[in-house]
Picture 1: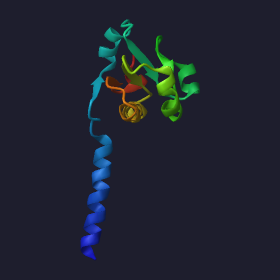
Picture 2: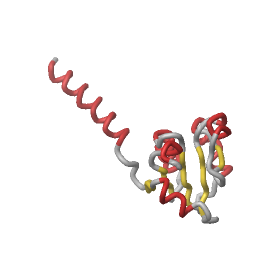
Picture 3: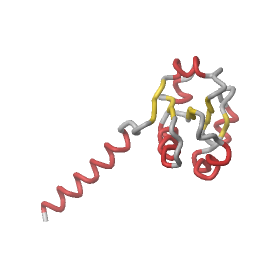
Picture 4: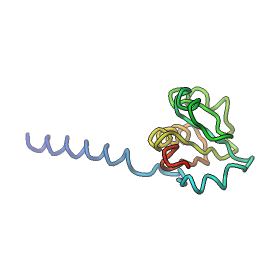
Amino acid sequence: MQYVNYLVIALFLFFIIKRFLPIKGVHNITTIELKSELNDKNKQFIDVRTPGEFKGNHIRGFKNIPLQQLSQKAEKELSKEKEVIVICQSGMRSGQASKILKKLGFAKVTNVKGGMSAWS
């Protein structure tokens, strides 16, 4: 019985740690690095926050595709040929969005660490 408890704890820890590890194949940049990328026409800039958050404050050049709609809209609205740079409020949702994009076959995905909270 004790073996089962250890197994459950080990699995729980595995999934918690896995959530916070960097996503394989996803590049991470700071908001400072983002500033030098904003004028690159070969990149797509996606903000995965809610429409209300986006309306309240956003970076010019970013398109709002809320995280909940990303799976449905990504293939129609984004090019797999271009790099996708993803931002949210803190970096958590953009991390989830990056995983979704990688699973959909987007090769070049970049997550903005710290999100809009780190933007100045």
